[in-house]
Structures are given as structure tokens and as C-alpha cells.
Image (tube, rainbow, N blue to C red):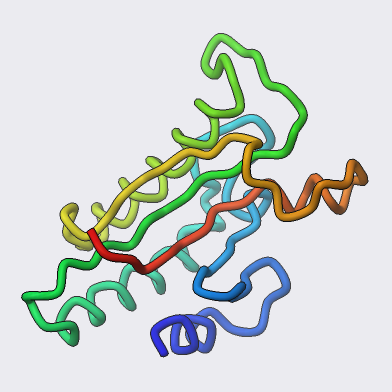
Length: 145
């Protein structure tokens, strides 16, 4: 129900989709290649997400220990820069950037978790540009603490 309402709020866009129990943002929409700083054009969508999370918090009973897990994922192409020594670090920092943004918009920190998965949880094991693009993503999952 939450993800259905969130999808409605964000609109019908191919770069945001509900996949099972997760909401998936393409990293290309949120970040420049090899970067973990949010693009300015991503903030509108993240603002809607923050509002939905704040509303959700008021509707779930306080005795239910829930969190929104923000998972960062990369493709298999290795990164090795002074800032990011591995894809794992890039994916974790991207997840942290999203969490920080949501916190700045009023989502309580105790309701957020950032996790980086690097290239180790691909949606598509292919090596085409489309497959690599699918794997570069931020996933949101409502789960128990």
C-alpha cells in the first residue's frame, strides 16, 4: 500500500519502479557517474519520498519497529578513485547521501538505515549497457529493525 501511494506521488516514470517489496531508483537519475553527491534534479522526487515517510510514521503503531532501508548498488565495472577505492564504498556513500537528505527533510534518523551492496546483488547479470544501468540503483525497502 505504501509503495503504491509512493508510486502515485512520484508519477509514471520508467526510472522509478516498484519491484516486489522494494522501490527502485536508477542511480543515473540521482547521481552523476562515479559520484555520491545527489543531483539537484533528484531532490524533487526525494522530497516526495520524505513526505510519504513522515506520513507513514504517523500511521504505523509506535510498538512496531520499522525502518526504511536505503540500499546502494553499483554495476560490475570497478571504480578506483581517491574518494572511492571500491564499488562497495561508492554504493554505501550513495545510500548515506539519500539517508542524509531524508533526515534533512525531517524523516527521523531512527527510521532510516543505509547499506551498500557494491556490485554483489545485480538485477541483471548481463554486460550490456542496459544491464549495467539496471544494476546501478538505489533500492528502498520497508522492513523491521
